[in-house]
Length: 305
Image 1 (cartoon, rainbow, N blue to C red):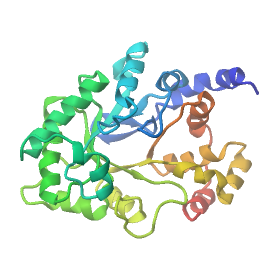
Image 2: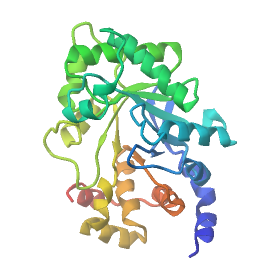
Image 3: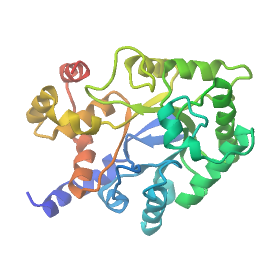
């Protein structure tokens, strides 16, 4: 089938099914399917909008590829109402608990003296300005800080953004169950429980024991117990799911792609996903996850893959 025919076949369905959502906070409905992009994995946001994506993901730390600017430009060129879009962005927590995040972004990150709450508020204003938005639908703390006190102080900036309308919901990213519980139990306490936790997670890439960055079943279960929506980035495990024999077998049975099966496993488990794509055909393929259902046996097989 030609690409034009493929687009025609999916265009009507994609425009509606891609907006299938999960309520992450009262009155805040987030699409299960989100199109993201980072310094090393760019996306074609203009085509994503045309194909039916309504959820988009970015971050202040994605500076090398002008990711935020490109997303904002695509939104402004679109005729789709802002209220029909869902934009997630993230701000850093510095100094970072992870040496990888520290070196990646925090070493060169400007700070507002010792006041991490004010630093967070400035970062929120910067990410909104870069995208060209008055508010974001969801703002996340991109990773935990070095200490729980620093994490809490930074998270307070998100709470302020929620209170004044710069965010409709707030949450965290790369927090494992321990880091999440530490945040919730810190002296002084959080005013708003995170609505969302985004971690690297996929078929074949979710540990049974707790991991540093929360890509594990322990963290997923803890979020469920706290009514915190758990979302996945790198939902195809950098393409490795395509070669998984269980995924390939189930894909053949449904006459869909391995990617669609892997993403459907997440959606059917009530988890959002954020993928990146510069391919028109891949965007449409990703949105086809709402066109079929996995059996209970298939879900179990994929969980154990």
